[in-house]
Image (tube, rainbow, N blue to C red; front, side, top):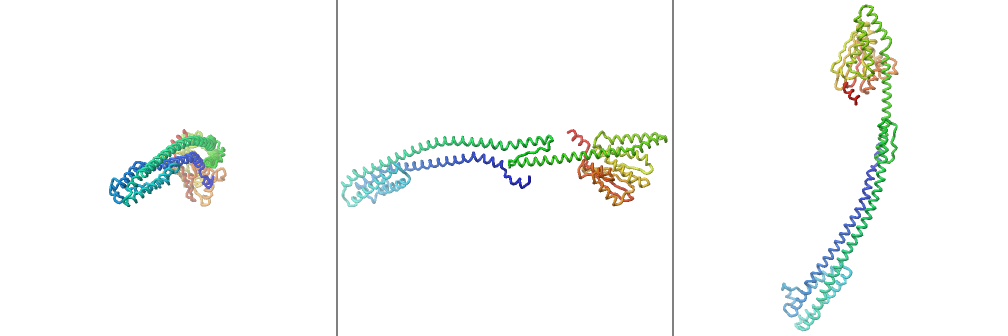
Amino acid sequence: MSDKQRSDIQYPIKQKLLTLVLVALIPLVIITVYLIFSLLNYSRSYEEIVSNMTIANKYNIFFKEDMDESLYKLTVGYVTFDTIDEDDSLKNPYTTINEMRTDLSRLLDETDGSSRDWLMSLLRNLQTLEMKTDTIKENLEAGEHYDENMQMLDNDIYILTDLIEEDIQHFIYYQTKDIENLQNQLHERVYRFIVFWGVVSAVIVLMTFVMAIFMVKDITKPIKELCDVTDKIASGDFESRAHISTDDEIMILANSVNDMSEHLEVMVDTIKEDEAKMRNAELRLLQEQINPHFLYNTLDTIVWLIESNKSQEAIDVVMSLSEFFRLVLSHGRELITIREEEQHIRSYLDIQKVRYKDILEYEIDINKDIYEYIILKMTLQPIVENSLYHGIKYKRAKGVIRVSGNKYDDRIILKVEDDGVGMDEDTLNKLREEMTTPCKDTKTGFGLANVNERIKMHFGPDFGMEIDSQKDKGTVITITIPAIQKEATEEKADA
């Protein structure tokens, strides 16, 4: 799957889970808002009624008493309308009337039903009371009509204040009824809310449960299929593929697993091919080492030594030959220690030195610290053989083959040098090209190409061989391998 296709998938699993949460959450939020709104509305209505009753109670307690006392004292001349405000125990009737009218007018805008009717009756009686008060004031200002004022006080004022007090009590009564109605409404709403909430909860639970079943199925089914595919891949079936088209993160994972399986299949095929090449290369190299000419020549040398009564030298050659073939076979192992590889080339050179004692000398200077590091068997011997037959032998004079080795950081560098005939630049370039060609396709320099190919196949492309040479001065072949100790390979094999 390309990066663009990955970016086109906007995490649907997250969206599915968010949808599931919203299905359960949104109704809860709506119901909670409705409940809060209802409670606030009930609280506001309750506070308005309580406030109205508080105002009404204020006048219910003091209005009649204040009005009756004030008007009586005004009528008998105890105080006048001009001096009544100076008496702290009395209140101007006009002030009381105006305050009450103001409060009742405000209450009129906030009430309805029977309470409103009694408020209107209150305002009418209050208006009549004000008119009667005006008459008393006019009579008092005229200085006469005492009897008329007293009669009006008894027959009109007291009756009107009684009516007003009664109206206030009726208003309070109906406000109390409003509170009772409000409580009944609240109880009814609570009951309806409980029923409604029960139904909604059942629906939400059912919807959430059904959605969860489908959602879990949508998620777990492809995951199970993906698990089955990964199990097959783990068991070695790299042709298995996950066929998932959910258009979500699981599809991304499935495509990644398919890509991995495909890459593993290619890698396994490549490894099998490389192993086959390695086996073929080793077999061909082994055949090269056990070639009849080398064996015949060595046996001829042994016979010649015996006939010359050089039995000890003959024994040494036989021992060297035995050691040579023992290390060639190595019990089928691909990797041996550098110590064993040194013994291998030493056996080979000891045998060849008997045959070419007039022209061959050799020096082996491999650091003993790297003896227990591993190397592919038959790495140095083909190079030493190449130095002998193509370098020293054509020199027509004594030559020296030097083998050295040391460790540098995490690499081991081995060198095979000779002071033989060397080669010109063109020949060197051709040989370098042959070394990079698969050994099965080489025409010359099979041994070098074989060793180089085996090193690269086993240790990787960063390792291998390099060759440098100068005409009539000699040749240097450098081998680079990773520094891997024998214990590490044994632990890996055991694991």
